[in-house]
Image (cartoon, rainbow, N blue to C red):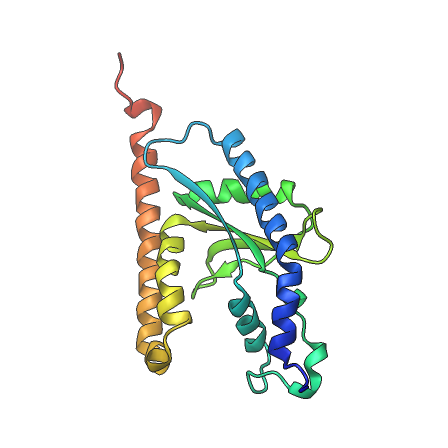
Length: 217
């Protein structure tokens, strides 16, 4: 019987870990939603906070680990036992989308107290501005699976849902085209425009809500 490939071993490991992956994602999601409900009962009109969880699918997890092999983007069959999905920090994840940006900042400060000691890895834009926050660490429900949560501007997060499948993980026929400098520039233009929209919205809203601007009864 031929030896199992690295991919075979990783798939077997994935399904061994799957119950813990689900448990970590469910618990992080529950704690984040509790914090949102407790601290943001009365959002202003137009403001939104959406919490979603996800677990990395088996083949996506294997592919993600494969992309870490920078020498040749492949696994060495003779070293099959050295590879482990436990290297991945995002097997179980939660994403928090917030609009406007001020809510994103508030959530970041609150959740840092809920998940103390987790590793910080913010999303950075072209000009080193923070597009969002990302943290990873161990939840008490598992000693093996690392969990992750992200706090992102809603506009940026929704754009990333499109960008991730078309640019970050394009079909093979488009891989070269989507990595072209022109596409990277357009992606940066979109992110800058979304940030400018939020900044202007917050400025206009804050001006309109000044106490001296409110109509008197």
